[in-house]
Image (cartoon, rainbow, N blue to C red):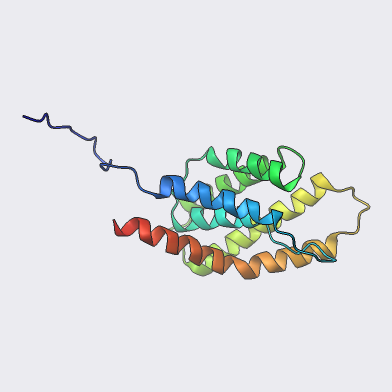
Length: 170
């Protein structure tokens, strides 16, 4: 006779794949900065941040609140930004989105796109203020990077939704 195991309410038999798939996809997005792209102006968007925001917008419970600290640490180590900048900025963005989720009654894709673009712009500007001297002329490169990030965010959002749809089928 097998003993019956009782699960607490709200728990499934095995954890969903999004528990490990979301952080793994953010890490892979952060590793995109290692691609050898030759350009005069650094236009490559922060893919790790974009994937983090995409997962946060698609499925809010895919990661715990403290996970952006670890993912930001990994991004700082890979991208060469000052240690702690992505840790702080990514965590602030996720916390602000959590506050907006409690304040907004409902959201649609356009609001998600606007909020994510604002968060990406905030991280790019704050990262520029932390990483480069005030006299450096990187504002046009930062503008190119922001426009590329805002234009590519719907694709990242769709990628996260596609990865999550496979999780929700089970």
